[in-house]
Amino acid sequence: MKERFKIYQHLMNGFSYMLPFVVAGGLLIAFSSLDFLSNHFPYLNDVGTLVLSYTYPIIAGFIAYSIADRPGIAPGIAAGALALVGDSGFIGAILGGFMAGYVIEIIKFVFKKLHKSLSGIKPVLIYPFFGVLFISLIMLGINYVISPFSLWMVDAIVVMEGIYLIIFSIVLGGLMAVDLGGPINKLAYIVGVISIIHGHQSVLMAAIMAAGMVPALAIALSTFVFKSDYSEAEKIQGKNNWMLGLSFITEGAIPFVKEHKQSLHLSLIIGSMFAAMLVAMFQTSVPAPHGGIFVVFLMDNWWGFVISVVAGMMLSTLLIKFFKWIQISRD
Image (cartoon, rainbow, N blue to C red):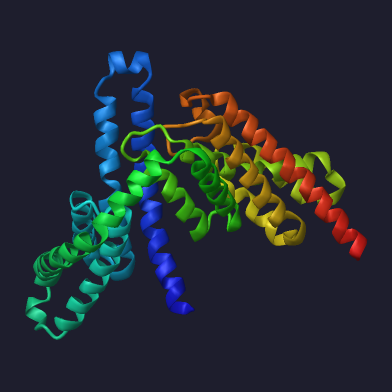
């Protein structure tokens, strides 16, 4: 269990450093599609594409950094870059990041008894040279094995439509509310990122975004409408959730789920699934990986997004009250 927690920590470390690149690059590409900006600042699309290309090296580099400290950065970034050019994508970059970190740990062990007079060359020569050398050989195997699946997965996600798109959106929408910002939530979010990473308008990303907004918004509405069910501190915190939810920050729901798990958790999952389903049915799509209500003007069929978020929020709010009523009746 302890080792699994460490693996999760390493992965989340890489993800936290990668996310700003995804958001910045995706938003620049999205804004570059606007007529005014495309006419006056045509290079925005190129800048956004360049920044997005950093996502694989960054996630791999900081996974390796989390494992092996600073010596892991160079081989980790090299692993991510090789995953990019080798078409093994996020999976290859994540595997490469872990391999780079553990390779450096092995190199540290091998050279730990190096004479003190030569210890100064370890961080500037031995670690980067042997780390990058060995990870480049390892990535040949990772790219060979993973790239066919990665390319198939990207193609399948980008071209998905019809009932398959609706079902997949429902599943991902539910996953966004399962752990509210934890590893399952991040896994669903990465699928959305994959669907837009090459500059596509994505229904899946819009569905995931709507689903991720519902939990915080539903709690904000519940604390406003059903005030007697919450403490004064919770009602104050509930007001903050309006902005968190509108900004697509799911984590605002976490304290409430911990306190009212029986009535809240399932309610939020169902509302998120409902919102994601409606987005897919309305065929609302977005080119940006983040932003919530603030990127609505970039969406195709933006009205479908607004309807979906409001409907999911209201359904979750009513279910929260219903499950609270059942809980009180049992007590």
